[in-house]
Image 1 (spheres, rainbow, N blue to C red):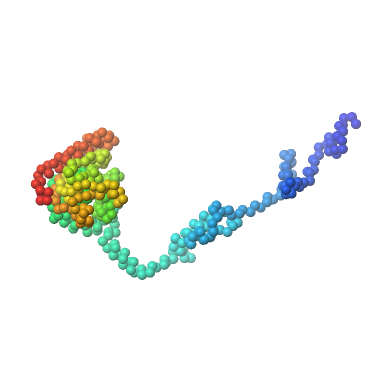
Image 2 (tube, helix red, strand yellow):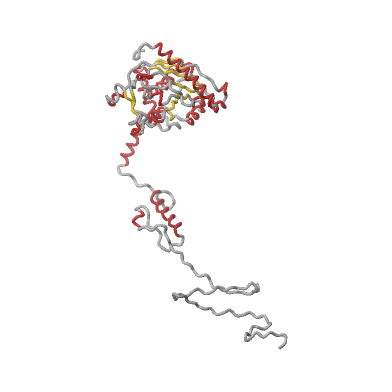
Length: 400
């Protein structure tokens, strides 16, 4: 027939547009004999908007509990319950929540139905523990300052300091009028004595003999601060761990701060080097004075160098005890603990005229390293002159 194309026996080969029915599903098995999934049905884009295509609901996938680490329940310890059973929906997240709840139930106090915590289980012989607590805290103050000073402990130590100050060392003070009655100030002193008796004597001198009876807060070296019993005692009576931040906080509170720029080098001098000032560190006290607008009061202490005349010191063994050195004196360590008793030398403490650096150089001068070193050397020279003057006046180490 003209005008028509003969397409064989295909009934859908005519010019009319007809949709071919989908082919029947065919299960094709592989070589292993397992059934392969059926081909996904594709819906053509030409389907009308009102046409509905039925889809089979997605298969339900069951989540299984897969812990990261498989351990027997006994390895979780007695304070943790067993993990959630297998098949739990949320897996590792719920395991963590379950463990947190187990620990929280054992750490936090139990609560009653109304939400209030239940009464804790009483300790056996609780009245004994309460009595011991009161006995241990009988001499402690309920309130201490932010640096750890305890007024009750300081009051208990006062008789001992008074005995050392007036009877044992027979301290004579000069120039107490140079210390201001109020406001901030920086007492800069030489350091000596193997053990820091000089700081305690300066504290007691200003507290007892100054007209304003002011409290002095000495900055204590790290090794003294961490020394057993001694560091705790110094902290309780008013000592503060030596660092720039603590010193600034004290000065901003208008307190008297005593610093010893020689540090460990000062108390570690041998007897042949006595009263020879060591290098004043990096001039940190000058930076403090410039930043905080505080006067520097040069102070000289004579008599502390001879209380423990150190012949030599051992450094290689001292590291095992956490101290910079072990002193060797005529009495220690040969006499044991008795060798730590200081010799009853005669002491002199002199306070010099205040030095005001902030008025001339300002707070910005603290950033000038050359200026800081120069001013530190000036203070060191002034203290050395005061030491030499006191040594010329002294006629005897024991009797002054």
